[in-house]
Length: 97
Image (cartoon, rainbow, N blue to C red; front, side, top):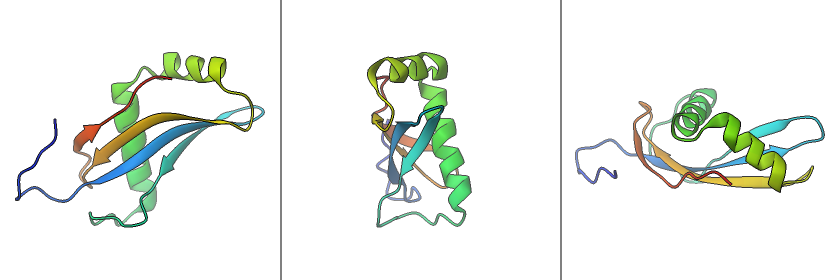
């Protein structure tokens, strides 16, 4: 799945988790401190990460699992996704809890 081509644009790996609040779940993107790719719009890359996650995991099943395993105030890790700014997924370690 990884693209090791030297001509390929740089990609960055983002951690993904679901935060559990009293009355809602929060989709959390963990951004590395040193980005390799040219991300110009913070909201755009967070949306790309979220889109990539839900294309690979069943959203309803994942959120039901989070509800079963986590209490309010906890965070459930879903894994990582490595993306280029154009939305290309280079690699991922995503899994339902």
